[in-house]
Image (cartoon, rainbow over all chains, first blue to last red; front, side, top):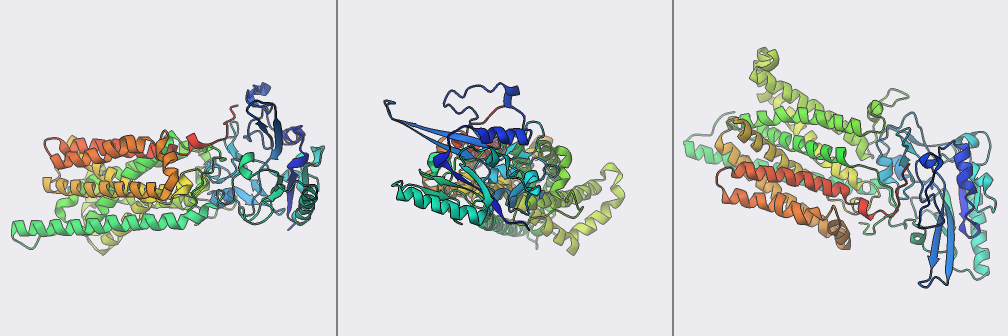
Length: 272
Length: 310
C-alpha cells in the first residue's frame, strides 16, 4: 500500500485562472461541452457552471455584491471529488465498480460500471455525473494513471499559485494547519479547514482552507453529508414493522372471516 | 435524524422508468403478499383470488426487470448487479440497498415464477394439466406453507426496499426521513389488492362476493395504514415538510394523493353502490402512481446545482 495522498486546496490564493480545469481536460482527454461552443452562463464570469461528466475540476466563482453594487467580494474555490475516507458512492455502488486505490483515493472502474446512478444519489457534494457518451458514472480519478507513474495530478501540477497542493495526507494537513495559523496571525480569524478532520465522512482526502461557512461555497455541513448506511437499519426496521402490521391484520381478518362463514354455514368452517 | 436539506447534490435522473418500476413492483408485491397470506391463513374460497394474484405477479416483475435494465446507462451490463464481472463470483454488498434489492428482486422473481407455473398447471394452461395434481399437492403440504411464507417475505421485501433505497443517500427529503420504505409497503398492499379487485370485476373472474368484500376490507386497512405512514413521514420531516409537500411535485401528495387517491376510495367503499369496488380501485391505483411520482420527484426542485447540458 502506497502512502495515502490527497489535495489541500488553499482558496485564499486561488485566482480563478482555471488552469486546473484545462489541465484536467487535457490529461484525461475530456471532450468539450456543446462541441466546444460553451454558452455564457449569464450569471457569472464562470461559464463552466458546475462539475459535470466532462468537467472533473470546476473553479467556483462566488461573487458577493452589495445591493448597490459598489462593494464586491469574490471567493474562488477549485472544486473536485473529495475522495472521502468513508465514501458514500463507494458504499452504495452495487456492482463494485467504485473502489479505493492503493493511494487511498476513490476510483470508478469504467468497464464495471453499468450506469445505475446510485452513486449520484449518495454523493453529498454533487460530484458524480453520467457520461453522455459512455453512459457510465464519471468523476475525478485523482489522475490514477499519473500516480502509478510517480507523477503529480495534472491539476496540482498546473496550478500557478499553489492553491491546489498535492502530497501525503499527513504532510498536507500539517502544511494547512500552519497556513491557518499564519492567516490567524495576520488577523484573518475566519480562516479554517474544511474536511481535514474526521467530522465529515471520516475525513476528506481533498480538503480545503475556507474563509466563509461551507454553504457559501455550496458545500454541505458535517450534518448534511452523511454515510448512506446510517439510515438503512432505521428504515428497514420501520418497513419490517409495517410488514408485521399487514401480516397480523391479514391473520386476524382471515380468521374472523373463517369464523363468520362457519357460523353462517353451521359447521366447522370450509376445508382447504 | 438529520433535518438539514443538502441541496448541493446532483440529480441522478431517476424519473419515468423508475417511477413505473416502483409502481408496478408495488402492485406485484402487494398482490403476491395478499395471495401468500391467503394461502397461509385463508380457505378454499380464497383460491380464485389467489390465482389472480399469482397470474399477475410474475409478468409484472418481469416488466420491472425490463424497466430497470433499460434504465441503466449500459443495459448490457445488468448482470454486474449480481455477478462480479472480473471474478465471476456473486456480487453482494449487504450494506448497499441496491445490491440487496437486486438479489431480493431476483428471489421474488423465482417465487413468483414458481407460483405462476403452479397456477398455470392448476388451470391446465400451456399443456401443464398433467402437473396439476402435483401442483395442488405441493401447495397444500408443509412445503407449500413454507413456500408461501418465503414468497410472502420476498414480496414484503420488494414492496418496501425501494423506499429504503431512496432513504440511503444524500438527496434532500429522501435522506431526511426513514419512513419511505414503510409508506411504499402500505401503498403496495393497497394497489396490489385494488388490481386484484379490478381484474375480477373487469374480466368477470367470478371470485366469490364474500372474498371480494374481504379484500375490500383489507384494502381499506391498507389505505388507513398508508395515511398513517404519510402523517408520520410528514412529522418526521419536521420543518422540512413545507419544502417536501409544499413544492411541486411533492405538493401532489396533499393536493391529490390524500384526498383523491386515499380518502375518496375509502368514502366510496363506505357509500357502496354499483361499481363502488371498481371506482375505488381505479382511484387507489391512480393515487399509488402519483404518490411514487411525487416522492421520487421531491428532491429535484430543491437542488441548487445547475445542470450542465452537453
